[in-house]
Image 1: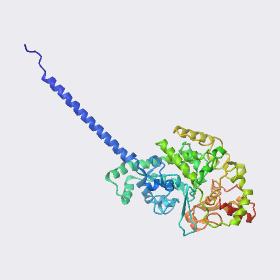
Image 2: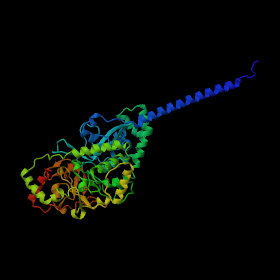
Image 3: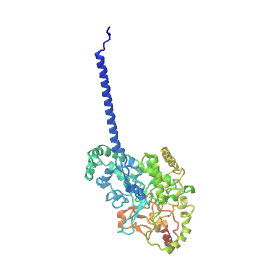
Image 4: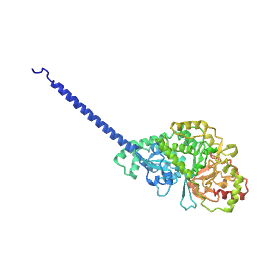
Length: 501
């Protein structure tokens, strides 16, 4: 007997259609996933992939210090081709002729970027700063001589104030747009079709937005009652306040000279020594971390990688020694000067007090640098770094009361003098404050062996430098009257000895 069950042909068709739709959906999903993966790979390649810097930078310690990346390109970097064309587009916003050279950067012959500017591919080539921008110095022994470059020395020619303003001022200008920038970029390089699109519609708008975001943090650079810092100076603790802990602008103003970093390991926190001019940091490790974080402009992407770079920097600057004085020294005078130094200077600069804070009442120099920082700011800055998972001794959470008695190694190359760079030469420093120069030009790199400092007068100094006026806010040359009453012969001998340090 045959079964009465009969298969419904519509049911078979429905099942077949369901399987077909399922396959189509799976195929569509796979296609979407493939497209998403391809898009993600494209975005990673064009915006986030990182390429190692060339071996000529990474294999040589001096070159690594001068041009090596510390990771700042990721968040604070400027796209290379935008960086390249900005001086061509906005010469009216430069402090003088010569492109980036107008900012007094140290620039080695044959190199595409100044010292302290690192170039790295993070998706596309980007330019950022490293420690060497402020801590490589140059000097010339004669007007027609080639400059001598000293890594870890204080950059006395850099006009950092003008450089910061230049970047913001360019971004604020309506000429900073994709049409104008691409027209300039196309004159100097041949980008691929894809890269031209990315620059026009993504990279240029984002760069402008990020530069404009800095305007509020740099607001105090535009105050008419605050003079420019001048070449070789920065307002370090205000930079920390406005960038690390995002404080509202106050009325403090305390530019200081760029410090040298050579032989940094001589500062020992376990012996009561402090770092920075105001003694506001405990040790070199903390100083390097905080400075590097300031350059990054954001928490480090890879904490271990960042701390490894910090340790390398500490080892490098600790091993470096101050350069020898390049001119002749009167050895007999230096020997006599050593005895003068022992009586007049060693109590602060070659004793247990060296590297420790000398009370302001004793030293008598300007208090404006101390007024830029306080214990509350230190606590908040330490909390910011701690939140990043970074351990360090950090900033000193107590009121500032004076200035650190400096070690004097390489003192001949650290002009101008006092914490705010208000005295042009060591010879001037041995004069009473009322007899020191009231105006002089900062930032000329020709050395003056007679006065033990740089040439600060004359047409070339005026052309190359910025005018320092001791009557301006943050510019006082008062205080540090030690040695000013010595006989002229003793002063001359003391200068000869200081050249040997």
